[in-house]
Length: 319
Ligand SMILES: Nc1nc2c(ncn2[C@@H]2O[C@H](COP(=O)(O)OP(=O)(O)OP(=O)(O)O)[C@@H](O)[C@H]2O)c(=O)[nH]1
Figure 1 (cartoon, rainbow, N blue to C red):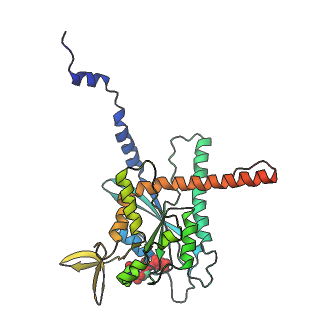
Figure 2 (cartoon, rainbow, N blue to C red):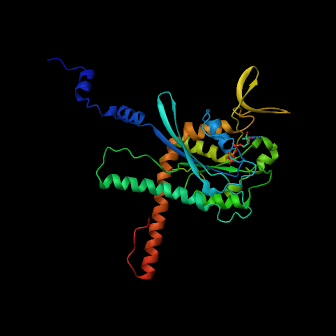
Figure 3 (tube, rainbow, N blue to C red):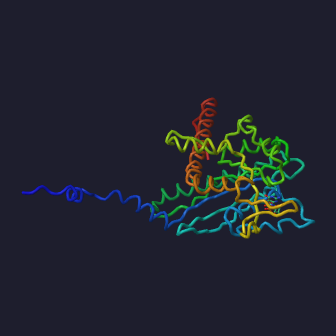
């Protein structure tokens, strides 16, 4: 009897689990993806403009927020806006949480409190939703991810170094969310002033900023994170308008002295920020959020245990 060809043996022993990748892809594509971003920074620093520039469509109305006689908004005004955007059949549900008025008051003591509370509450909502799903055995029910995956922190382009309040707020926020700082309206800075913000002040103040390395990362991923860290805070320029450069419309800002091309890396770091958030680290931002949430929960649990043991009573589960 003749031996079966290798192809036939392979066909006979093929069980087909390699199709899991296409099964996952199909399921994920049907469901779409969720990305929740919070914008933190003073009024008028270009928060809505940047989001509109990144997503190249008018997502957030950046006009008409403040009337002349309207008092400066406070951070209690936090409000989320949801959008569904689609690219090549991939749907992204985008939740943008704006925090108008942060740091605008004369007394900014505890001005970060409402933001931190909001982020913690959205984490807790997610936690409770999963618990409800487990308890009621709704295995197939898709749980919408309410957690905040990224905080874009807008630094005022003062030309000096970071304000003490920014350092405190970034530290507080980094305990509960992935913080990505950006230098707002960097077209107003000289190259020297821009460098002042990048002189490792963030490292000096020991602010724990995203991205984080893990043991799973290969050499390329580690190198890439290193490049990103050396660039942070990204010096960005935003614009909702197109200007004509060499006969072509480009996203930019025109002033008396010339044109800033937002997408030209010689002019600003907008393109690096966009690639980092959407093309290379979107999934990692989502995954790291779960890790931060877990670490915060664990340290709360340990604290509760310590307090309970020193008071000689049984520990309760923290919320
Ligand atoms: N020069 C310069 N101006 C910008 C830039 N980004 C936005 N602006 C302008 O700054 C003004 C305020 O922009 P917004 O996007 O509304 O600022 P915001 O931070 O969302 O403001 P609030 O909604 O009040 O908190 C607008 O006139 C924008 O055109 C930038 O990168 N450079």
